[in-house]
Length: 248
Length: 157
Image (cartoon, rainbow over all chains, first blue to last red; front, side, top):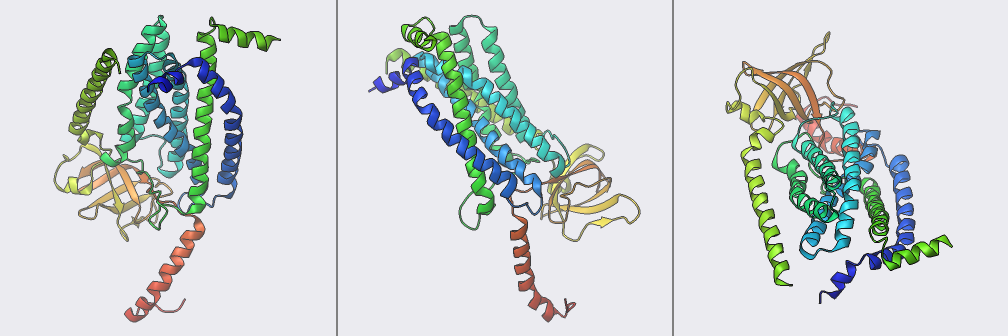
């Protein structure tokens, strides 16, 4: 019953499968990203309060929501590393940390750029903004911890534990706007009926951008993990075969 | 699952739940400090000392904004629909500041009035294109016109 699970954890299997998926994912992302960006920047109507500033949302919301998905991913990988000692899980966790840190930084930066004209300030120490900043520091901490410990096995264990502990911050970020009063607005109602916080001319491009940025994250993670696999498995026969074939 | 793995998983689950409960409780205890602003009701209940630097938040009450003609001085009422708080401010208001809009002000309470040193606008979670807003406003006007006529309000265009 557990066999498929362990096969999934084999770096060789992952390397071969991801090599087959990558071109398709790349095509899909390029299409979605270009449609989404052009739609958001050129064709989305101005907001009645924000004017053109609403276009920042099309980068900020996807990037921020995906940066929230990164920590749970690292925590799950951490549990697998600690319990099943699967090498691939640790490679994914290692590669996800810097990507997640970049996404968090971009979410913070775009938020500040939006906040200046709308709120009248770049930054406020409200619960949403502060918990997001803590996530950024936690990710920097994971990266630093990994490079501070020399033994790869010990580093994997320590980082897995930090990822599991740090994932507690994710629900805090998500619900901060409901639990406390904050300057940041709560999440918009995304339902299809008349309760919806925005009409289709505003949310359709947003959904496209969310999918596009999700794919961008997945592709970055796959590319980075493939590098990590080649690096760590460089002494195994199948990697030597690949290298020998590439040289010809 | 093998016994040693199950044991490890249980330990991790225990650590995660324990830590989650600990953090949850401390955040709950700290919630007053985490809140970015006090509401007018909290001010009315006397939760804040005179002269203490705080932030307050609420909605700008309709029809309450009084702007000075020859200076940047502005007064308005911030409300949470159960209590009101008069706010005085000398400075530039953010573009989004208007009646019926959320607002966060920094300053201190003095004699029941809030002396603000900074005013921020709070954006709500609703987005609407200029066209849709104009159409909604037109529909609103159409509905309210007959009412105004019966009230004997100003007629004509």
